[in-house]
Length: 118
Length: 113
Image (tube, rainbow over all chains, first blue to last red; front, side, top):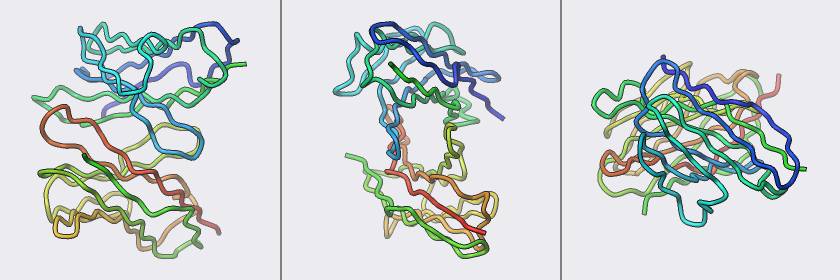
């Protein structure tokens, strides 16, 4: 089945530094990747959608300059939290979607990254 | 717009009890419906799905039927286990356009021995 690998699984960083989170589709090509943020005991909030080779589409209220998304290949998307602050501490989850023409797997989620900014 | 409404939790059950988690949706057209499960500290795993009215999705003893007349997709299991303790998310996606998943708020299930 489809596997999405997300790294790191957890990270602690100092306030003001940047953190990069990687999301890789291991056995399929992901034309579209989604980035979510999840607050404790809450649902997933979609932050942005990225298509390979094009700029990400951000949801309303999400700062593009703070959450940089790059989808340089069909198997890799990265989320960089720039100049992180304690309020950015959260659980970030990526999701990858198979090519529409085959759509064998639908949406596959990574295991998430727990970011703590101190 | 599209939305998903789930029953609030936590749902607390004893092992082998019957489980129902209600889910209703609002959408235009004919969305696909999903149930995802999230174990502590992990991402989401697809539990089951249904892509058209009257479809029944099933997996690991869980079932849900796509009811267009009631716009519902309730999750059921006949006999829960302690290992089923997790958060369950109902979700939909429109089969046209940008195809973004829309999630419900999640329902925490706690099963005691």
